Image 1 (cartoon, helix red, strand yellow):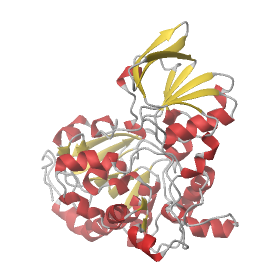
Image 2 (cartoon, helix red, strand yellow):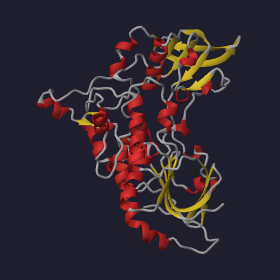
Image 3 (cartoon, one colour):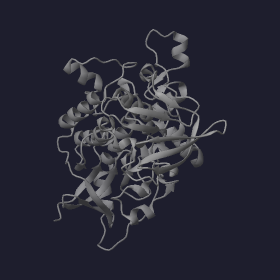
Image 4 (tube, one colour):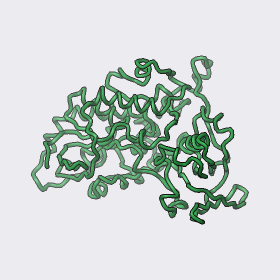
Length: 418
């Protein structure tokens, strides 16, 4: 059943999608937003996790900045500090739901099944069966489609292997032997939570040691230290400050450098507040994963240490906390016709200053935009810049673009890039 045409459709209801929707609502733009609120955080993060991001950089963004996380905690009498006070996952998720109900009450809790070009417009089919046409689409789906499993583990059956994003509930591993592969916050968080949950766990990391970072500091820091390491939404330091405050400047780097730097900047590390809890954790650091095979119904991992010595360990299950690799071709609801027409940098869209791809009216934001706007897009705080930029552009061009893109049936979509 074909529904009425709408001007803008946002796909995804995490911090980016909800923040953009809150802005569009105030600007009076005709929009729909499709998705389950904070789904990636609820479904993919382990219960009991603490956010590595500082409190002040863990907010969603309405146009008036009237409801940051600080305000939510104040209204509910919850403890909060801007920095060096880890925020529990459950509080952040409930804050996101409260933000959605307050600023984006029209959210439609459905999933998009397909997006296909329809002239200069887009036809969207929902899993619930509805079909409608929209002039512009904002893809804000987060990381879920981009889970990365190392090649050495890919032959293992699903009952013996999972990605860290599939492990919100770790109780199922109690009494088992588990190997967690990785060296970032997901790996250390899951390994520590498993250890505390009476699970025999080993953390396997290629790096010679696990980095837990350090507190960002507070107002008591000396004036010189504040000048040397100013605080930003993604961490202390002038480089982080620049990437966070003026992400558009990132576009002036060469394409090949942008691709690598966006994902590697800051590097893998756990939260500083988890270091003490990792004291008794079994860690095999400086170990390269060579092979994984099924042996007597369990997993046998072959590891090589930095001095070339090989060792084998046997476990009941392997959790690959090995991150994500953005790839627009892995977004299942985007038609091949659209993906094939996109101008790419590596495997992600090359975006204009307003987050628009080379196909008119198709926008991307969140982690998939990191190659165009830098590492801040990997964090919730990036929704600040993205929501203001995208929403203002969509509001300004609403009527003008709609009339310009009118075309006769059968005309094809023309690529461009600003």
